[in-house]
Amino acid sequence: MKLKKIISLVVVVIMATSIGVISSSATVETGVNENQEILTFEEQLERINNNVNLTDDEKAEMIEYLINRKNPVFTPFSTLPTSKTLTVPFKSQIEDNYCGPATVQQTYQSLYRLRYGGTTYPSTPTQATIATAIGTKPSGSDFQPMIDYINNNYNTLMKTYESLWWWNGQSGFDTACREALVEDKPIMLYASISSSISGRSSTGDTTKWLFPTSGHMLNISGYNFVTSGSERYQMTDPYADRFTGYSSGKYFVSNTVTRSGTVALGL
Image 1 (cartoon, rainbow, N blue to C red):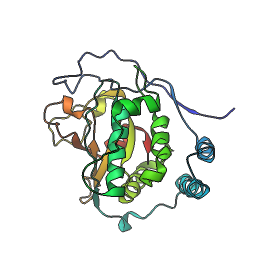
Image 2 (tube, rainbow, N blue to C red):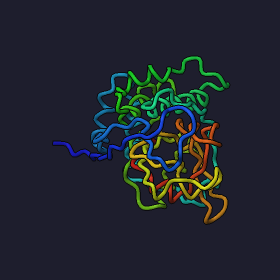
Image 3 (tube, rainbow, N blue to C red):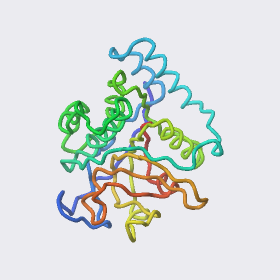
């Protein structure tokens, strides 16, 4: 039997609605299924090999990328830019359980713009269309189908994604994230955020996440490592506009707190 990493999530009763302002101390459920499976490295290789939408050359390129991530020779920090910000359009999730579809839509639009240029996205699927494609349920979405959705559009978007839930400490986490962003790949982030690392004192507070949640999907859209001790990632969060001061969907979280809240990365 193949081994899978089982992500156990705690069911929490929501004490807020999907409209208006929500307290940053209230636990929020934005649409992530419980006990979902994230594919192992070997299963991801098999998924690529069996993808009928890919040519042999595309499969070979994707497999090479996966192998390099599995056995990374990380780029030294000194050779990476100290900051990078991608244009990831904010798309407010239209349903409480649509953080997955909204994150895929944000990722798709960012990649589409990089591929074709311009600021419009004539062929961007709706969140409802994406929800159907990735199997979103009333309880939410699974992470792996989000990865598969982007990869199934490989010919259009020209980027390969994998599920990464292993990294070598903070430096391994930071290098993986920074390399992906330097490669113009918005990161799809699967987060589980405890109350101890959430509840910001202001919009500029990078020491905490915006709200606690047992499961949430969003994008990492940039980083700023210019000043030692103030390293941080930019989030593009499809649920952020429910909170006062976050109508843009953008906010920064320190690199250590980002890692503490991360279950898996799509990059």
